[in-house]
Image (cartoon, rainbow, N blue to C red; front, side, top):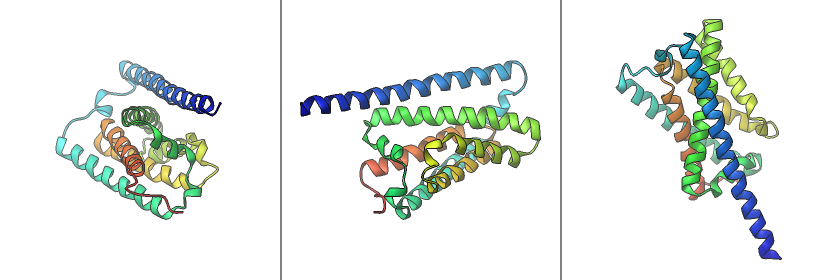
Length: 202
């Protein structure tokens, strides 16, 4: 009986992970379709999304922001007690490396395409002000992470990166940069916890 219960728990866990990956994949494709439509109807230009003018600048922004946000995440993790950390974040560490990679990559793709690629660009067209667009988009980004409302310190962990993702997107005009930075931050922190390189404060 004990074996059966464990088996059911493992199956439920597998299904949840697979479901999450399917959901993120679906939403990512929807975002790509919306962005494609906005380009076709001349609302956006391809230069708004994928400007490769200066590869050195893109590289510098990507590396600097990734390292900065990884350090920010590590510092927060070391100083915030484990009881104030949302359980969703802890569950990612149990994924296999491949599944964790796919899940976090799809999460970064979906969130950046939706928030920076679509919302931030549309808000900028409406307000014609970069920082108003970045701040409103970050507020919406935070609002989507409803699981963190019960543990408000986690909102800081979303707000600062959200502002940085928005800023580097406007600085580079390349949606790939915030996607890569977002992924490196999430994947890097999760790996550090998975392999006990860092531990949450008790």
